[in-house]
Length: 197
Figure 1 (tube, rainbow, N blue to C red):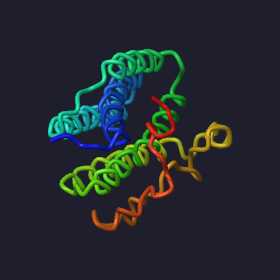
Figure 2: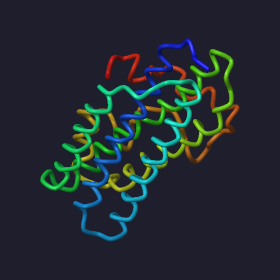
Figure 3: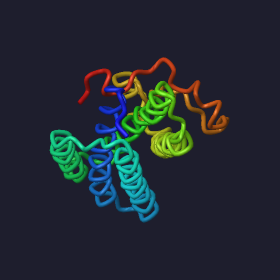
């Protein structure tokens, strides 16, 4: 079954490849930290990203959507570079930019769900909700790790993410049902819409 929704097709392809970049980055991130608890938590986040990639691919296959070679090569390189850089840029920046990235990724899955709903498909609502929530859990992990760091206020002022700022309106403490989650990210555009291929 083919779907006639170019933004959705592009977002699926983008998410599939970007999850690989994230997973590669977390391999480097986990390898660069010394504390066993941190290493284990980051390794679990990496595994979550691989699972998300597998899930997105399974959805793509249902609609005969193929991964884009351009995205695959681009995000492979990006992920490897980020992973390697974790060994030389210190502790703070990998945590900060991972949190900021996860913050933006949350909405990608809720927007994807909205696109599917626009063409009358609700079969993926639950799995997209779960992936969006998992990305939020990742964001919160990094947020909590940084909340008392002296560099956070400066980076938050420059980059807009931290204790006071997030790229999404999802609240884990007061999460809503799958049906009610339609209201999440209503004023956000996806990365593919913004042209961040």
